[in-house]
Length: 169
Image (cartoon, rainbow, N blue to C red; front, side, top):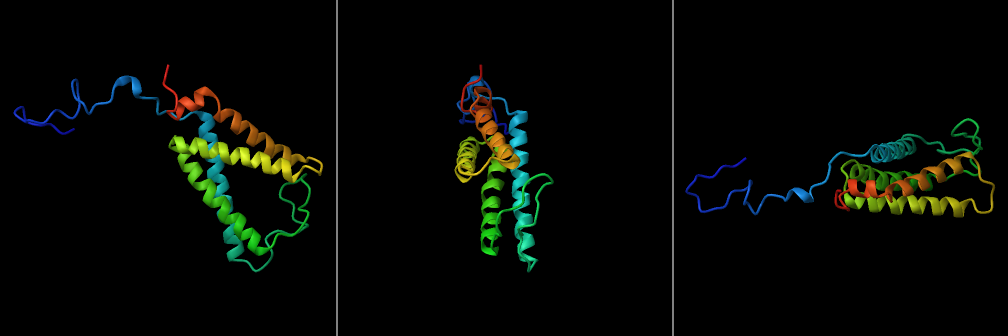
């Protein structure tokens, strides 16, 4: 802390009577809720997987997805091949969206909560539209559950308060 001499004409930088100190009622807890930590980690994981997808495309001459490729045991196979350009686009988009979102959620930034709401609401909407005429499978249900759960969680007053958008009690 900077201490000024007693004869200084400048006001003190902190302490009682200082116009530069923050009032005690405007601070909020910087403790990150567990749910926000989980969402941030999920987005870090998504960004990492997107980077791995890009690396696989760059260092491989084969098509990234093949109709017989099964992502997880028990989930249906991919219905069609994805072109190299589409895979690059998916990898770049995933990294560009998920990495800043993860960093913002980790730091409890207000813009990150709004961005996360937009991303998860958009994801649920796209998932529902893409699967409107086809039967809903396990991966679709998992995607919908994560997206809807994240939206509901981010709209809770306790979560909004953690981001500093509501005053503390």
